[in-house]
Image (tube, one colour):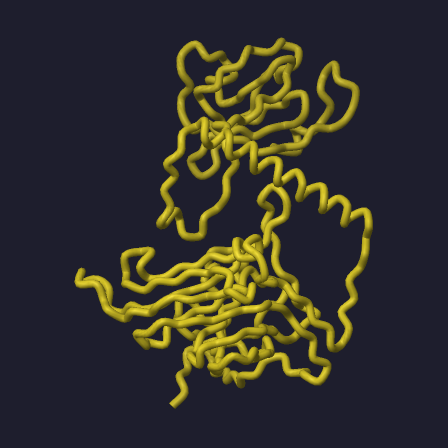
Length: 362
């Protein structure tokens, strides 16, 4: 039946029409077109209990599904399951328009409350538009310059240099007290020597609410990189093989976190972790950790099935303090970067075992 609907339309020069499937909105009433543009008898057939009507319009032969009776006075063709536009052009399916830009929130709005008037939102949006236009101009200049980057053995790239307030604004500090789940506190400020100072106090005291069983953590995390107009991008570190950080610690142990959240929400919680050991004293220490040593975890739990880190899909880098010690902590950071070691050829440090399907090892 579909093949019989292919052909030329009367009064139209040219081309064959193509079949499409379009759902009918019964509430959409359009003017009835001229008779010469309409087929004489619409062909119908039933398939799996769904009545389909085949109509040839200006562009194509369209099987339109009839999901209910149309309202009275909406026209013959709309009532029969076909929607026609002016001069035989097929009607356009319309949806409710959005008047604001949409940004996905992985946390579903948890802990966020927008208490601003429309006037304040418009004012802040205009300010942000000016910033986004400047970013877009820089991107266009870089695109026309076309200056390629070559990574040689022994090269190091400083991704974050924490030497001014603008650099500190690219990080977010959270702790358990922010969500009412503990009494820890943390902050990121400039130290007297002009470097980033991640400091605070851990408290493992559990709130007496009968819900929280563990407490005592503070976290420092970089924000996700974005291009102009909030376009999400990744840190592409495929040409490097080590994470380098220059810091001055207090002798406590921390946890390095590298987030590699993919496109699907199933991977939004994928974090690669590795312990960061510091030594106290006034001297700086340079730490290099291979990417092959990081361990895959999700929501704080080490996964049974490990995999190498996707170095081209890095979203953020963070440092967590949670060694179960009720005492102040202090971690001074000079910079965080990536390094390429020509002598390190390891791709994944952990040996994985495979079993047959539905078989458990003894």
